[in-house]
Length: 480
Image 1 (spheres, one colour):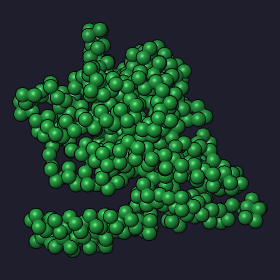
Image 2 (tube, one colour):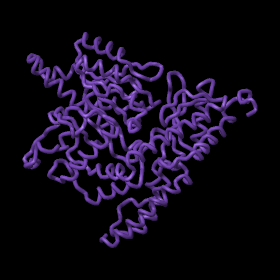
Image 3 (cartoon, helix red, strand yellow):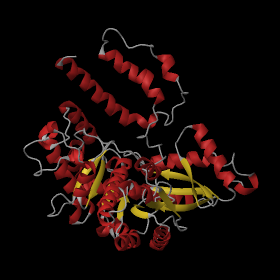
Image 4 (cartoon, one colour):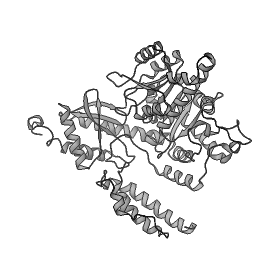
């Protein structure tokens, strides 16, 4: 493909993407295909000769779109949002066009420099303490990871190596192997599955601590667990606090946890993957009270802040802990500017890294801080409107409503809500998923698509209500 053909193909694809976003609500949000559908529709081998791009684009609509779950449909209310905006898409296009691999400063200075600048912008936008910023006098700084899973693992590995290194000096009789077998980490029983996976990958047991009725982990629970484990000869090294849990968007008591971790000299990592975006709005920053005592903080701009996947922002107070944990030097990686600018290969698990900061830069510049705040506040207002609709119907009850997520259920036995969500799922008109809040089986309703309107909320609520009569006993509906 030459540049002329690329221009034609690229323009056609831009039109296709714009039309897709404009009309996505007209598509079924959940596909009806079965596993293996594409294997029967496509040749068993790659083509021997190249094909026309026009034919490839036709097959996108014919073969690929029938198997797409439309995360950017206003009828998609499952999980949490995955962001999408035109500035981010264009930034991703430019990143692919430049095609650099920015593992150290010299391999593409702008790749590193722009990441430093945008992570400073973003940290200030959230109201993070200066200690976390690249612009601070100390060793703090921000780096873009691929996901919150990576950020949690990076923090755990750095904390693990820090403790092993310090104890090996303090207790020369203990080998590194002996120390590692005694390490433990903590999180709440509502934390994301990726936190548990980080423990598996780092070979550090991740202990899940019980939360209160509101889904929040308290400092007292953590302190007791640490005391018990220390008495058993274990070595606590890492705590993951959740600001916005996956199930219900509950917030751990960060201030209490931070005091405990400071007293016990334990690394405290904050996972705010979804809810962290709300901190661009000052009225939500009280939810991260205590952040100044934490060691690392992570949220995903690719969830709620208009930047498409993947873009996960991680800040640390002391980047030297990352460098000491991940530094592998080879002569072919050395350059004359080492130590002057960050080499982000030392701040992450892989060596190679994409130019992710371009799409973040595009979004920050084209939307601006106020545009991002309007987006967040609008989505929260839509969730509040949905909550009002639920509360106005005597058959339902809201069990939790936080930011852009409402968790609700039919009154009565859990089986009623289970039957309701089964019927909603079978109809494929909207997409919702369940979770438990204590013993209650609830439906999660998240505001996900950037283009969602009040009318879309009413459509989704009408779809939910339409299945109630087939779910609830007649005497319970009171003729409704």
